[in-house]
Each structure stands twice: as C-alpha cells, then as structure tokens.
Length: 122
Image (cartoon, rainbow, N blue to C red; front, side, top):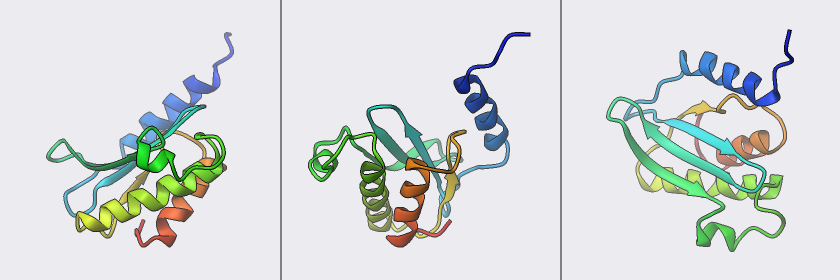
C-alpha cells in the first residue's frame, strides 16, 4: 500500500470540512490558504458565489507591515487583523471558519486568534 502524502491527507480533511461549512451573506466563509511563502484569506458568500473581502501577504499594503517571512506566524497575525478590519468595513460581524484542511496550529491558529481579537465572531 502506498504511503499518502501530507497534501493528500490535507485534501481529504478539506473535503470532509467543506461538506459541513457553507457561507451565506449574513455569515460568509472565512477561507485561509497557507503556502510556504504566503498567506491568503477570503470572505466568501457561497450562496451568491462572490468574494466579499480578501487579504494576502502578496498585497503591497499588507506586505509592508510584515517584518519576518511572509509565510510566518507574524504574517498570519497581520493578515488576520487586516481581514477582520475589511470584514467590518463591509458590515460583516460573524463568519464561518474554513481552515482549508490545515490542522489548527501554528500560523492557522495565530491567524484565527488575531481575527477574533480584532472583532470577528466564529
């Protein structure tokens, strides 16, 4: 039997999670994607099929605030704060958290805690 890669396992977790997590206009889905170099976050309304707000370390205004690496825990904190602020500007107070199959630790945990501290409820 072939050994499954960590990405295969992440994809399986993601599929299980997506069966349960749906975003609406009142409570959009906060989806986070972490790569080795960057962190991306989106607020998605699955009913309408639109992205309400987004934040990423690729964006110049966010990248200017990041001191260490753009895929680090510190970068995740900053992206969490920025997406929470952009959500508030759009009138969104509560979200459903989609960790995209990633385990809840490290940068994902830092992102979620920063978003909660900035006022998002999930």
